Image 1 (cartoon, rainbow over the protein chains, first blue to last red):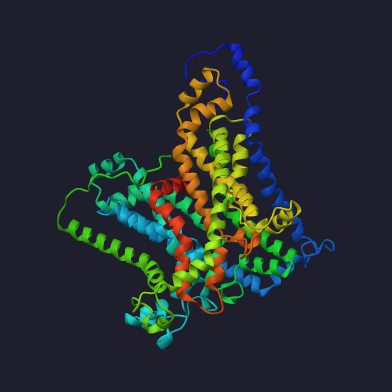
Image 2 (image 1 turned 30 degrees about the vertical axis):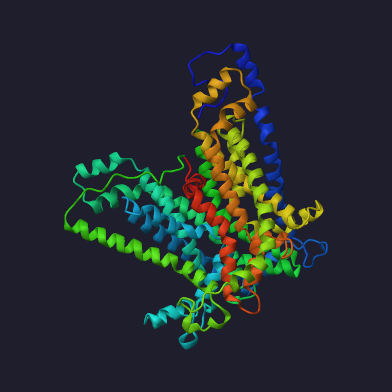
Length: 315
Length: 289
């Protein structure tokens, strides 16, 4: 991009004097204009991350002031805590399910709609509407749907399975100690698959028509066209979807609070544990959990940001 | 990036033989099946919200109400209406403020850059992805130090600040598509930065403003995390009141379901009216360039 003031796109040479004056002070205006944002984010993002890191190294397990430094002790205790390990494991299971579910469904829906269908806008709107709803509101209905009672007393989805003669599908949902967290991913997949569909659909429609034509002229079958020509074009979209859904997934909190509540063991994740430690007043432990969560997200996001930065610099 | 990429109608598929017909039928069958599956929770919400207390029996769980009652809706409205007002009072200023700031930032980053603009942009972008748990403890303390009142004022401030990265990104992507010639022409005429912004950029910004306002409206409306830390059931937004209503000791299903519908209505209306832009905004916020 050529917005540097010395390289006008229009091939007209401006008066030399004015150009020079503009170059020397060219950056003062834009910096001033962005200063509020830069300062505020420097404080509220980077400053607070620093402050949180410091808190996590302190002996501060009450609401009162710190009682000195603790080094890595808070982190050592955290990783020695079975519940925390369990909640990390839960987070992994949840994220894998959420990612696989939204990617598979979103891709499938986009593929089904890609060539245009009668009533396409209706399908699109219905698939997409759950993402306009808050996790708290959808949690209300999913708590009912994921009711763990089975057999005679069952309601929700278990009841539906029973009525349809699919009793073998009845399960304890989020109360299962090993797999319970995966039940929480079901509503998350319901909410975000439509979004991933919209991403893929935009990807499909962004592929130049010539590519399809060329493949058809070369005698490619419909499947070969998709497999070798169109699908590979969608990998940047898939990457975006993974970044967006992935970072949402690692922050899962609202859904668990709405469906299972903060005290339920089988659905513990770092975010719920952090909230519990905060309410207990254990600020050091809460900030250490926050730090771990931040690091996990950074592993996913920083490579993406570095790539964006390189791309930006080339502009 | 165009806001209606996905609504671009593709040309009709070529008319083909029998296998194509079978494939078509299968395609519609699948689409319809998924449609029904996605609508299941909506059905449950609606049906249950109209059921009276006498219909709590699990055996009738999936059936229509024997008698349509509005008690649940009345109880839900009583529980949520004060919070609904507060949520509007919080969401509207938050959305407007972060949109205005995002527009200025996006303009600078796309069209009036300064040395180091790319690193600043990348650092701003990081703020979009951070889990707020990673800053929450010092944030609570900072807000106490600044003595920002709990409830609506705190939440406006937080949604503006933490909304800046996404609004900046969307506007930046939108302005990056503005032809250079427009800006250069204004510069040739001697217009400064602010003049260029107000006379060239601002008049063509309406579509981006719609997207950003919707995006911020929806995410602030649906927020629960900040609300939990910075408000309570008496001064907080509707997500807090709804969760309070729904997680009471006595499971009042009809009121909770009616409440969930009431609490979702504003975002659903926005989404139904302006859904096309909404999707465009998602695109701009995710797929770059």
